[in-house]
Length: 169
Ligand code: AR6
Image 1 (cartoon, rainbow, N blue to C red):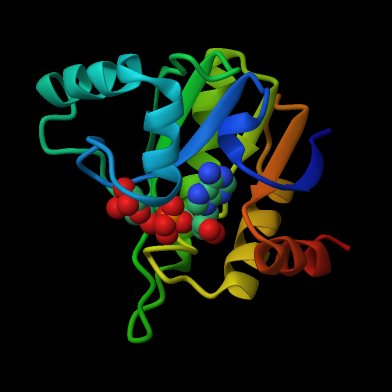
Image 2 (cartoon, rainbow, N blue to C red):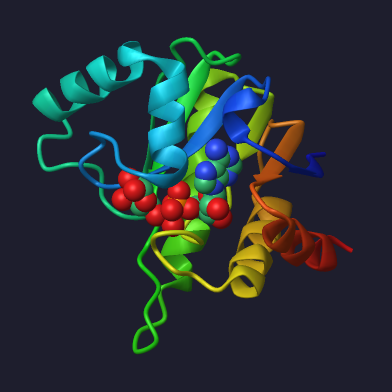
C-alpha cells in the first residue's frame, strides 16, 4: 500500500529516499523546481546529468520518462528527473503527464526507494492547469503498482496545495 501525503513547502527542504525533479529534456537545469534542486543539491547532480547526456541519453530524456542521479547535498539518496509535457489546448497530453508519475515510481522501485517526494510536474513553466494536474497525479499514483510506501506531494504554494487537497479526498 502506498500512502499519499500532501505538504505545502519547498521540495528541496524535504527528507525522502528520492526527490522527483520536474526537469526538461536537456537535463541540464532550468528554472522553477529544477533550478531550486540544482542550487541546493550542488554540482554533483549536474555532473551526473552531463554524463547521462554523454552516454545513453545523448538526445536528452524524452517527455514522460524518468532517470535517477545522485541527490548531491539534498537530504535524499536520489533525484529522479522526469520531463513533463507542456500543456496544450489542442492535444490531449495527459497520458504523458501520467507517464511521468508512473515512470518515476518504476525508477524508484528499481532503486529500492520507499519514500518519494513529488512536485506538481508541468504546473509551472509548462502551464498545466492545477486541478487537472492534481487529478492526473493522484489517480496515477493511486493506481500504479509499486513498492513505494509513501508518495509525498510537495506543493509550493497555497493554490497548488488546495488543488491537490480537494482531489485527495
Ligand atoms: N518546491 C516544490 N515545488 C516547487 C518549487 C520548490 N522549490 N519551485 C517551484 N515549484 P516548474 P514545469 C512548483 O516550472 O511546469 C524548468 O525550467 C511550481 O510552483 O518547476 O514542469 C525546467 O527546467 C509548480 O507548481 O516545472 C523545465 O524547463 C511546479 O513546481 C520547466 O521548468 C512545477 O513548476 C518544467 O516546467
